[in-house]
Image 1 (tube, rainbow, N blue to C red):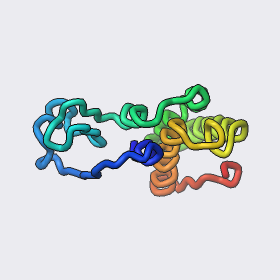
Image 2: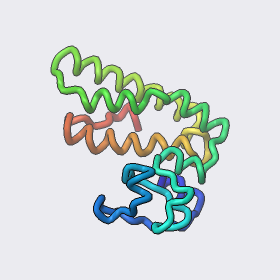
Image 3: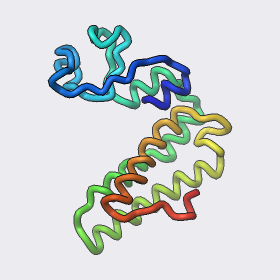
Image 4: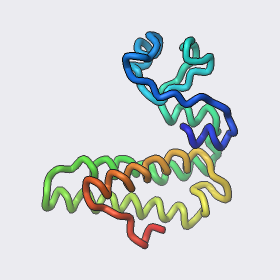
Length: 154
């Protein structure tokens, strides 16, 4: 969501808030979920949205090229999640890693066809979506699995 806000040049207040300091409207309507876009400010939950992709779409309209890129990379986060959450060794780990490698290959193919961004010359909604998932893979993959993206994924 923050990447979309930056691309749209939207001013906003970043306000990390512990559960005991969240307003009641946020707890009631959104379970306290973060991020949460509150267009009327922290004290008024009218029109608030608390899902990253929904917030991103509010400020970065999905172009046809972005939609196509997201469709092509649709299973990417599933591959990341399966790999990171797998706790079984051996064949299960090998299968999770192979699935992740397949998803990374799809992503690389989209980038190779469009470049330098997923939908062409400028960043868009697809980049906002995939970048966050790559960050999760980069940080958690290295920390929990010793996984580092290889040179085949520049």
